[in-house]
Image (cartoon, rainbow, N blue to C red; front, side, top):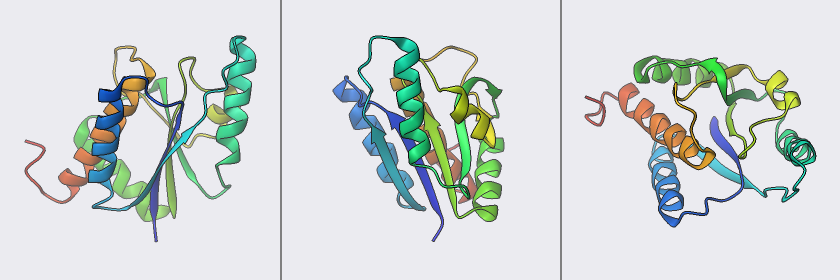
Amino acid sequence: MKNLDFIFIGSPKNKSCCALELEYHKRIAHYTATQLITLKDSGDKNILLKNKKETQTIVSKLTPSDFLVVCDERGQAPGSVAFAKNIAQWRNSHQRVVFVVGGAYGLGEEVLHKANVKLKLSEFTLPHELARIVLLEQTYRAFTILGGEKYHH
């Protein structure tokens, strides 16, 4: 079975953000096998050390055959319809598609170098909690577009 998984660093501190994440992930699960993998924030005060530890944790959850999509401000920003087409293509070609949103300080170079795609969610800089919700909502929207459903007008 094909999987579409999400790897996030840390848990949302805002309960509303957490509820939205769970709601959109539940909706995505109607269309595909999926996991929401929340990895512990390293807690380090030193940003470089924090980033290194979080990068190692993310890499430990990946396999060589994964198709890796990382959220990064230097990536490409497709529209919703193009994103839906991308998801369909990625899923047709790979057993597991993995989306990664880093913590407050982004992703380490090792994860960025492993990425098959760098995805920009917005021209705006988003807090990582909001980036997670945007990614999940747009992924759900992509499945409704692919299914010809009314969610996307």
